[in-house]
Figure 1 (cartoon, rainbow, N blue to C red):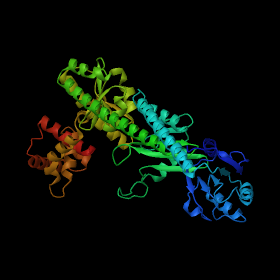
Figure 2: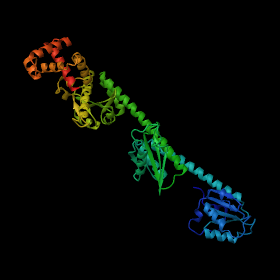
Figure 3: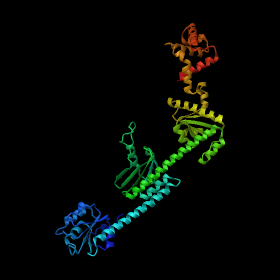
Figure 4: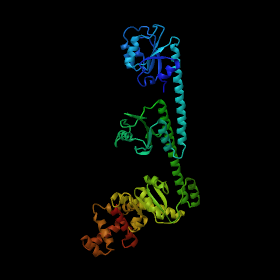
Amino acid sequence: MPPSLRTVVRRVRLRPLAGTSRPGALDAAVRWVAVSELADPTPYLEGGELLLTTGLRMEGEQSGYVAQLVARGVAGLGFGVGVSHDDVPPALVEAAEEAGLPLLAVPRETPFIAIGKLVSELLAAEQYEEVTRAFAAQGRLTRAALRPEGTHAVIDRLAKEVGGWAALLGETGEIVHATPDAAPGEVIAELARRRPRPGDEPRCAEGRLPASLALSGPGEHIVVQPLGGGVRPRGYFAVGAAHPFSPVTHTLVNAAGSLLTLAMEQGVTRFMAERRIRTATLELLLAGEEGHARAVLEPLGACLPEPPLVVLAADAAALEAMESRVFAADVEGVAFAVVGEGEAARVARDAGGPVGASLPGPYGAAALRGALEQASRALETARLKARAGERPASVLVGFGELAGQGLLGLLDPAAAQAFSAAVLAPLAGYGSRADLVASLRAYLESNGHWDAAAQRLGVHRHTLRYRMKRVAELLGRDLDDPGVRAELWLALEAARRG
């Protein structure tokens, strides 16, 4: 804070004459010292000055002169006696008292420059003290960032330094951490208002958050800054106080923003590194190196479950939810978790989406590869069921359920569709006679009994025999061969389910 008028009066022994009787009159801050003999010096003043004059051109009534100074917001008026006037003009004293402007007598032996030098030295000392306080506060913020709670500790420390509150917000404006007296409601609403709506072009400037945001209201001053080194913020932090922020406070807010961004970026880097380690660990397991895999996970504080184990497969978006509870890794965009048999249902609920589960089994390269394949197949079925609305979006399908759906349930849907299209292509491309496919299905469903199949189709059995002869010719296969019948039935079922 700049020195008060009281401090200047005491240090250079000025004599108060008028306008100092009201409470707080001498507590006004002196931001500079100005000397002027003009009848109206206010165009050259900013407010907060201690104006010094010898009254060289001062005569008669002075209420207009004083009113100009009060309107400009000067801190006080110092009158040098013994130069133009032996004493302060009574008219000036009367006008100053009436307007409440502090009027001070400056003795002849006190040069104006001495008053200017004093105020300049006090201002410099105050600035040095502010810089020192800022450095000390930045040091405390830095030490807070090194604490185990990291970003949360920085938020708590920042609130204490500014004498207000602070809050850490997520990417969508949700509260991650806040001091007990925080009031970020207005900030959250403003972020929501500025967030681009779906369909907005990325290049559109409207709705984007600027480098920083300042909100002010009665008794409330708030600064909001985005966090993260990229174009899209990874989060935000807000700090508020009942008083306006000083330059030192803004420096602290910027320092806190740098520390929070650094901590956030380091956390993301460490998080991605741990994910790569987990993926490499899964590769070790698939290579049969269970001991090495456990040794790699130990420094991360993670461990592998004891067998019998179950492999879960889920969409990549579920990886974060699963890996916080169990060992999980990303393999080509699919999140796989290796869990104990008793944990499968709980972890699947945490995933919040379709999940496929393998049959319980032991460790070992072949067994684990088979478990990953089983979980992947079960995940495909879980996705289909979720899309069809047969089960909730968060659904667990075990590989054992697929066995109850027949052989087709155990096959990869895409591979089964491709097989079906290839096998039945000659029939589908036979002119416009789609009855060959229907006739083949009826024939197979009747186990090759001509009368039963013909009755099902509503045709004469000789007509059906002709059609089956044409089917055999087009496919180049013997319909009396049980293996051929099995393949054709599988192709027809895959086409029906597709």
